[in-house]
Image (cartoon, rainbow, N blue to C red; front, side):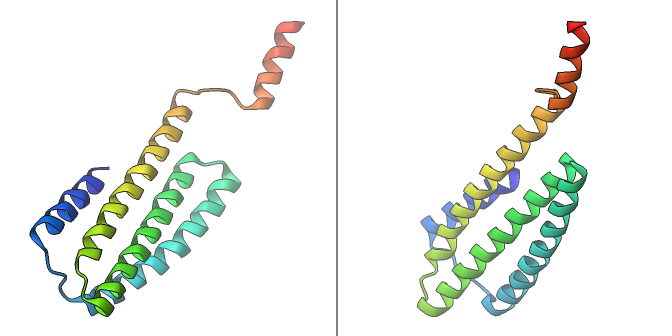
Length: 135
């Protein structure tokens, strides 16, 4: 969430002051590799998280999926900047990235919080309790 705030502040600063995008070619290669790595890792973590019902692994998978989406968005913005010279696009995508990170972070926090406070028991345990008290 703090990262989203930093990204948003920098994006706004660049929109207002007219920031420059440097070393686009290197950035595109690094971002493409990061996106591919995050897609593979999030897919594996998500599969394991679902099979083990691990909240931690599911949260990590969601985090990495968001990172992959963010990387693809940034890659797209760099392609647009390269093709059109419209450097404001990078900052505009930065604001969208900050919003996506914030939304995903809130979803992870709320989901984890519900598990931590045991919002409800699993269905089989609830049935067991009801049967125990009905005797």
